[in-house]
Each structure stands twice: as structure tokens, then as C-alpha cells.
Amino acid sequence: MQIVLLGELQVTEDGHAVPLPSSRKARGLLGYLVATGRPTRRERLCELFWDLPDDPRGALRWALSKLRGVVDHGARRIRADRERVTFDLDGAVADWTTIRARLRDDPPLIPPAELFEMEAALARPLLDGLDAAGKDDWLAWLTAEREDAHLLHLNVLRRLALHPDLQGDETLAWARRWKEATPLEEDAARALIGALAAAGRTEEAEAALGDFLAGAEAAGLTLSAPMAVEPIRTPEEAPEPPPRRLLRRQSIGFCRAPDGARIAYATVGEGRPLVKAANWLSHLELDWNSPIWGPTFEACADRRTFLRYDERGCGLSDWEVDDISFEAFVRDLETVVDANGLDRFPLLGISQGAAVSVAYAARHPERVSALLLVSGYATGWRIGASADEQARREAVLTLTRHGWGTPNPAYRHIFSQTFMPDADPDDLAWFDEFQRQSTSPENAVRFQQAFGTIDVRDDLPRVRCPTIVFHAHDDQRIALAQGREVAIGIPGARFVPLEGRNHIFLRGETAWETCFAECAAFLAEVEA
Image (cartoon, rainbow, N blue to C red; front, side, top):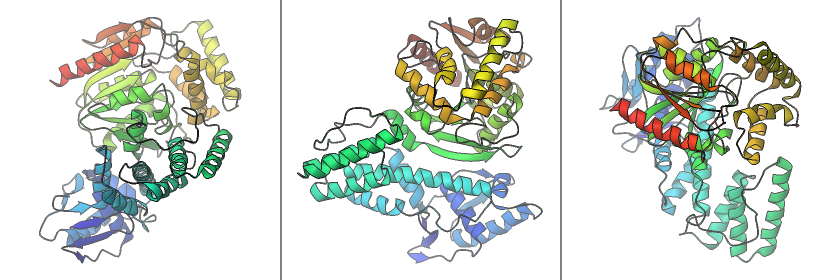
């Protein structure tokens, strides 16, 4: 059986087209089950496609019965129990899942003929014509999958433009296609300029260089290295940075919290799961380019399936939400874990994410196999802080409210300087701008207010899983004593004090290297 998801949904068996149900919802359901390739809760499928006061469960049963008549010829491919539904791809081939798996294995060289077929398929919209098959959550999922397909399409164009078996006009043609698909991508511009230079078309190369530099300056982009008119380099001479490769391989999805807020999550890597609770500002796409988060997330995805999400109010999650509170943060973690069907997993919490992780582990002891807590605290700044400290925090709230969204980074620098006092100036400048792009001034204030009222002291003794706690001796954001209190409160927790002043550890400093080495050893011990 062949299933085409790129373009209009099609199913063929033994070379003959199989008629599909006329219902767009049924076709959308088939596309979703095939594309995800994992068991999905019936409630989730109902949320995607059917509204109350209709009978969503009845409608789901009807759609599944129609689809079985299409795909269960000689094999039971749609498998369902009382809780979950899945599509068994054994004996079937789906273009989207096959291409995605092939590219995410990241082979160093794919034959041009295979890349030509991939490019033709990826140029078509995923599940074309089914945008209105479901509700808002369906469209959000479809949009995220199409963005994933777009990134893979760019991957194929890149491979073709730099392929050592293609030369001359072919190389130039694919370099143009790559540059047209992503006009402000530095590597694509270098490929086009290099292909023009190699073909002896120096004037065109100089014009292309001038156009790109002007566009990059207008967009505020900073180049990784100076650009010049020179022949194209091979992929071996210009390897792709690991964080950028992981961004391409990352899969983004969306789920709905109980109050309706849409939460964006992302998975990358393969192996046993590692879940990270959200902390102060994130963006599932932008932070891969970060000198702060990129190396950390790369380490988290090493030989593991790494799952993280954007907190409500920031990143790709909904910004306009009624509730930004600690309880909402915990419910969002619950929602993301349930949406991904995880039964048991280690949980990483950084900064206020440590408190969220503690609360989740106390409420769901059967699901958390281990806690990794970094730079955490059990009580927010409104609880137990001195009057002077509370006054300083209130003053920062006022500065945030009036200055966060302005081009002047001084207001946001208050945070970056206390988070990472030992970071390079360029890293701090990046973090200043990243914060502005990640959330609104109003939400930045609401986050700080919510962090101030955190109190998980009663949850600490209820944690039953193995726990390791890391904290820098001279953390300029959260005092070492607060991290120590977290470790003291959790039965059997291991406390690891580290040298340094940074609240967020950076690759290259001893605290970062020690933290990740200890985490790897700790998880190996727990999972053994």
C-alpha cells in the first residue's frame, strides 16, 4: 500500500487507486494517524475534528469504520482500543514519513536521483485541500507539520546546491532555488554567490553579494563570517553547525491546556525520553541559534528524545492568555506530557522550571523516573525576601512595564546581566534581543509576578524519585542557600554545588561541563 500525504491525500494498493471517503474529516483523520505514526488518545482526535453538541465519540467511530473499509484490505492497519487509536504502517509506505525519516537520519550524502524525487514531493503542500477538515487545533497541527516539511524542503535544496556529483548549470540552478526559498539565509546566499563565481559570472556574483548584504543589514542580521565573491565550497569544507542541523530535525506540535491556551512543544533526537519543564522565556525556533541555549539543548538531545515546550505567554505558544500563574505552568506541563503519550520519563527543571518539576513529580510520582534540577528554588521573591529585595524587584517590574518593548536593551539587560554575569558581551546582547522577541512587555511583568508567589515547600517531601540538584556557589539571581534548601527538602536528593556566578550555565564554563557529565552519569545509574 502506498499513501501520498504530500499534495492531495491518495492511497493506492498494488498500483490501483483506492477510493477515499468523501468526508474531509475522515480523510484528515487518516492523514493525521499516518503522519504521526503513534497511538493517539480518542479524546485528542475528537478535539481535532469534532465540536459539541454533536457526538464526537460517535463521529470518530463512524470515521474509523469508513477508513477501515479503505485501508484494512488483507491487513488490520487501523488499530483501536477504548483509549487510543493508531495506524500500523507495516506493509504500507507513506511518502511524508519515509522522507522525514530519511532526512532526519542525516546521511552525509544522498544520490541526486533520490533528492530529485524528494524535492518534487516536498514542493507540494502536505495534505493539500484539507485545511478546513478540523478545528483550530487541527489547523495548528497541520501548519506546524507544513513548516516541518518546508524546513526539510530547504534541507533537500541545500543538499542539491552543494552536491559534489552535480556541477555547472545544475549546481547554479539548485543554488538559485535554495536562495529563492530562503532569501535571508546566509548559507544559501554563499552557495549562489559561489556557484556564480565558479561559472565565471563574476558581475552577477558581485550583484548577488551586494543585494544580500543590503537585505541582511535591513533585517538586522549579523553574518557568521565575512562574505566575498569566491567559488562554492563543498559540504565537507563547510559543515553545518549541530544546532542548525537539530533545528531542521526538530518536530513542532501544539496542544490545548484545560483553559484553552495553545501550547507549542517540540521533540528532537532519538532514544529514551528527556522532558524539560519551561522556564524564563523560550522560543522553540529562535533559541536553537542561541549561544546560550543551543549547546545545552544539543547536549540534552544526545542519544535521547528531547521534549520541551514554550511556556504560555511566550515563544510559539499563545501570548494572549487569561492565566499566567504557577498552577497554569504545572497544568501546561501535564498537557504536553499527555499529548505526547509519555508514561515514565526523567524531568529537567531549570530556574523556576525546577519548582514546576517538583510540583509535577509530587502530583504524578508514577510518571517521573528522575528529577534533574538546576539553579532552582522552592519559594519566590515575594515569600521570605527582605523588604529591600522586594522593593528592588518591584522597581524592576516598573522598568519592565515601560521599557521592555523598546529598542533600548538596557531594561532587558537587567535580567541578562544577573542571569549570566560572566557571559561574553555578544552573548548578552543576543539574549537581550531574544527576550524582546520572545514575549510582550505585559507578559514579562506577569511572569515576574507569578514567579514571586511560587511556593513548593510542601511538595518537596512528597517527591519519591531519585533527584540531583545543581547550583552555582555565587549565582547572582538565586542564592546558593535556596538551591540547598530544595535538596534538603527532597528525600535522598543529591546536592552538587558548582563554581561560578551564572544562573544559566554556558558551554565552556566548568559548571556546564560538570553539570552535564553528572547528569549523564546520574541518569545511567537510575535507568540501569
